[in-house]
Length: 203
Image 1 (cartoon, one colour):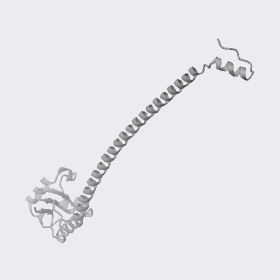
Image 2 (cartoon, helix red, strand yellow):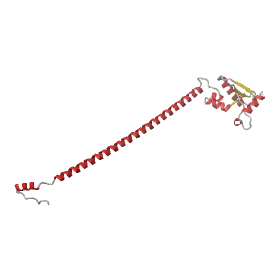
Image 3 (tube, rainbow, N blue to C red):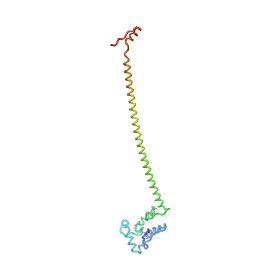
Image 4 (cartoon, rainbow, N blue to C red):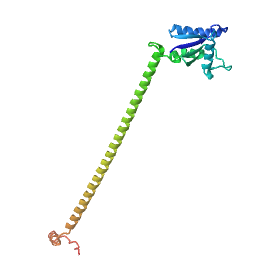
């Protein structure tokens, strides 16, 4: 892949010259291979550049000004786009090139990958914790249901025991009452012996 920088070597505009020099100087300083395409002395270069710059990047008059940057046939951008990419340390992405090791852009991409991996790990861990909490909550609910059922059974048993006790007491009281009728002859003898008045006999 070859980076193509379309410039006008004989431009009368000082602003255009400064922009061209900045782009070319940056590529040379960073040892990025590129071709300088002069549109002032080559009509084909001028025609090709104007035809391949996207419509939304062209000015109102429809004639794009240099410098314009391409990666082979793919349009990268104009000077403003180049400047923004340089400020954000994403110039290699802007040019469609793989960043060399040790550059800020490489470190940034590695950090992004690590962040994404950490985010994924964190998401997996949270999902696992949610699953475990859901399982533990369901287990707790099951245990509470079992405890509640066991408590209900123990209450029923206690009620049955109380009923049985009451029945036994009632039976005992009935038996004691049935034994209560006394021997009138024996009582008469007791009263006579002690010279007591005899109570009215029951009919």
